[in-house]
Length: 94
Image (cartoon, rainbow, N blue to C red; front, side, top):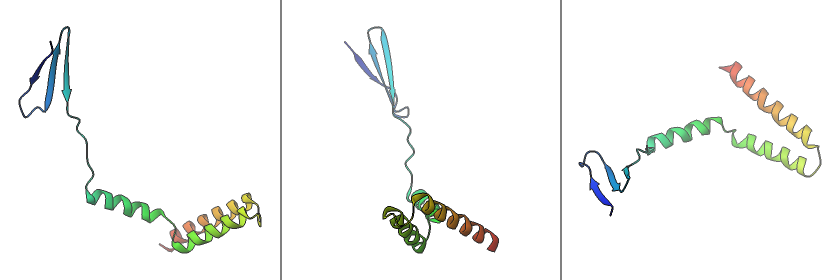
């Protein structure tokens, strides 16, 4: 014998009265990002990605490590060294 009561339209909730229990259900308040929010996030991520030329360099370095032309710790050290040198060079030029 549950009775369902609606609150006024402005409250956006539903109350269900059961024997011994009263339950209130409210619509969740979710934030839906706008196109501008998504564009801003994509621009931020794009700023941290390496250029196409550097992606090719890192890919070639990875391929050399996979083919055992160089050992993977050496490839990792070269990749990290190049990345650090580029960051330091770009910070010095600004």
